[in-house]
Length: 462
Image 1 (tube, one colour):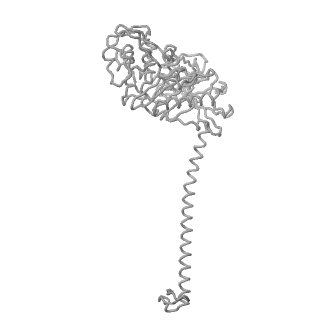
Image 2: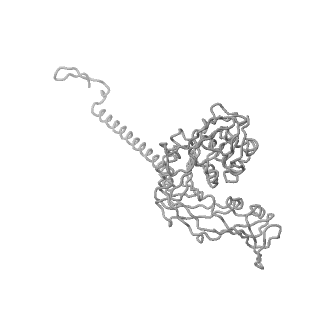
Image 3: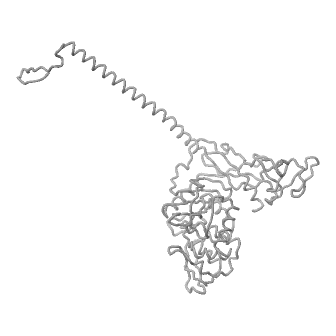
């Protein structure tokens, strides 16, 4: 994976959908403050709501904790619990580990991922890095490697800290990275487990995964879900990352800051149904992508251009109301590359002498080339963003309607006042005319009131 890290970081392919029909995602009613639905194979975002907003992850943090433990430690190794590891807030989730208690790392992983035990997460962190603070350094390094640029971890458990945050998109990237590791998946996808007795605990500890969509006995069960992690703190509220597989397609759903426990399940169910039912895969031939080039610099001077080609067809999940002819795509490359960055990326690049056609290796040899080629070529991008104009154009229409209604409303208001003014002028004119007629008819006594009697003898005034 390191070999492709540089290219994955610099190459972003965006597919732009240009069809006009209304998108099905407008029918979704996602209550969680932030959410993202991602295709695991390509990183394509199928739905997002505030996916780049920094938020507190709570115990979904433990996904990163599990990833690091799976990569750097022997799951069968025995671990001893320290006093510092079990110092937790009174309302923190735990499995009542005791200082001096010894148990396999694998059992600590089950406790961390299923029961969301903060004491177990702390023990794992100390075992991997020596201390929780050093483990946080590893967490942040791994987050940057994965591409989670808006994430910062302070502890292995997810207990609240104002400097401990992520985004829905970053957490989906982290989850996507983790599920490629079979060791991690063995814990991430387990619904029930029993921790055996230890040197200090004679009783077994039965564990149940709080990701109820994994549990057949739960009302929230979703048959396609293969793994997940939930979290909760007062500040973060309910959080959850879920992975589901159907018909060979793997989707990742992340919801953050759900108002209650049921909301995170209902939002996730909506999004998974939407992803599986409203999208189908479409391949774009590599020949259609062609070669992509950018300028190459060394020491501030241009020395040539770097060229990439697609090694295979690109696959994009297309909404059901669109077809392949509706796709327009664009490959975005940086305007320039630096030779030293390319060498440091560990991708095998080579130059071709413009005069002799001889292949030259990068490194200490002087560059005498018009083009630099990558022997590995360009991998499929880690992120593919799909933007549907089915949602874009209605938004534009609403905006245009708003822009039209403002002057129209003002015009109608002005017209109303003009008509009112004309009415008042007409009223005043008629009043004056009647007054003149009265004066003409009654002469000088027009302002006096005369007393008369009706035929019935009743007094009346005129």
